[in-house]
Image 1 (cartoon, rainbow, N blue to C red):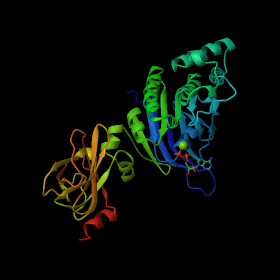
Image 2: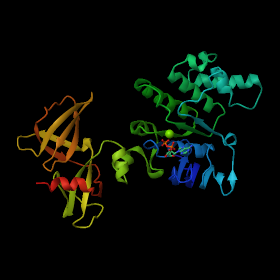
Image 3: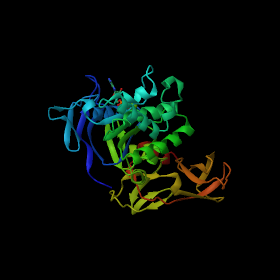
Length: 358
Ligand code: ADP
Ligand code: MG
């Protein structure tokens, strides 16, 4: 991948109202050419604020934002949103209800004759599969179609970067997967770089080249999807991305836990109490009368079964198994944990208290 930075944020900070805590703070990252970057985080974590700062709808309190190395804001510079060549698709699409779809798309096209702007708008409506409905009004089309039009409107001026705020959140489940593929196709075909914001981790992992995780306005990690899942750098990332359970451990000759001993790769000091991250796909189970695990629940998910297990300490972990394999609740199982990477965090007291109850 081309490593040239297209958009760069350097130590960007924004507080919306006096007395509030910062909506984003110390935010630094780079969007590369032709990259699709997802920003993932819970509601209120600063995702929309980040997009608005990049687009120029909000002014940062500190830090710099650069496009192709030239400052858009910071150091006393300020480039108006319409001069930035950055397109934004708003979460609610924000189509103009009194304008046809064609006029909605033409709205952002300032240059050229009416004829050339009409042709350009129809071309981009064609790209999103909406050309035939160009004379309709927003209320005459479905949510998915409105989304396509909002996308067309943002793409029409041929932006260098597209910003998408929760682009699929108003679509029903079937539509989401379809639009996700469609969006990827359109972005790749037009070689548009994009920052997509979502609170849906599956969406972020499936769509993006890299995913950044925001927590209270702080970017905790920015990595490729697999790295985010397999090597989370913070407990928040570990818990927010993918299904995660923790098992209490003590560092002695390795990390000793009730599901086995693991190598102390990151060199925790002897005696340290830690929590080992365990993903359901790392947990094997085998029915066994004197097994240490007890199946408390089977959650059928179509292709897989998620087994909820209780360990002797009372700790609960989950195991993902093909759904062709069915074990009843109350089955005793031998538990084998094979972590792809050994990820541990300083202990959370409640996990360790579980073990000391008896
Ligand atoms: P997200 O998109 O991740 O849900 P936002 O960026 O919208 O988060 O919000 C981040 C924080 O900033 C929240 O605490 C939110 O209440 C606050 N905030 C966002 N916009 C404004 C605003 N215009 N005025 C005051 N506070 C705001
Ligand atoms: Mg938001």
